[in-house]
Length: 151
Image (cartoon, rainbow, N blue to C red):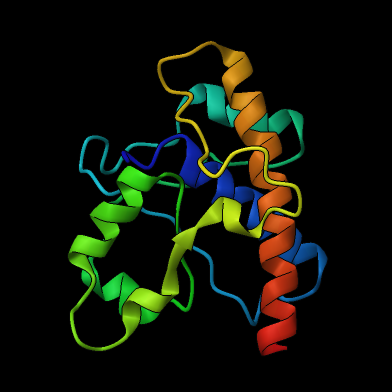
């Protein structure tokens, strides 16, 4: 939504996996929100703290709003929940087949307990830990899917 909790976490987790796999030169990673609530702001401090405890630094990221060009530029456009999926569908340039690039992040999890990553913004810190766990699992599945399809 605002690009300060779930998406920056996913970007950081996936970037770490890609770096560890030696694929940083081949895979471009970014995150954006469907709303402009926090454009220019760093990730939520709770997200940053959770990530740092797991060896990931999110502090250099800044929130931005997704554009239709993102759906043209990136092979994978991943939503955290159905509301954001529909918001992304609404900005997808029509008639070019780009909607096939859009999916839910949790579709890549090997054992998805939930199809949506819950927004931890209004909850306690434990919500950030749960989100991180979900994102880690899905990010590993996404990297495997990219390897099978593109590498």
